[in-house]
Figure (cartoon, rainbow, N blue to C red):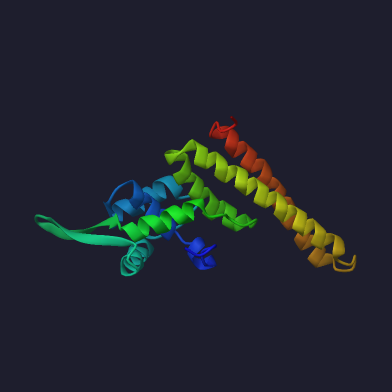
Length: 184
């Protein structure tokens, strides 16, 4: 796998769907329901988007769908993760998330959702790594801010906002670690 997934893929609910399928096979409606129940405040995905993503994942070989007959009801497709899809999900689960507020809110939180149910040690390692990455991001932004001329008001304020957001995320990460009881 590449060192970092392309931006559009990393911030796509496709990894959340792969993660749900890593838990057990399911049909599209069930996957959509689980996604909205467990990660609905993170991912805002319509049922049609879910089916479009499943179609793309199947055409890429990450999942395999089989038709299930339902008596008098319309047939439905049940999906399972392929070996390639499992490898891709496992790689993503351990991949770093950059020091971006949106990436942390969406991608990192989704990673942590799956890691916390699988392995508390992995969840702690992800939080520790994200804390370190976010701290480095704050240092980089502060260095950039210190180089900006005083008359660059909007650039300075934009950087200041980003620094404050990342500082808030550092507090949030610490709170998340505590809420998952990962302090030891």
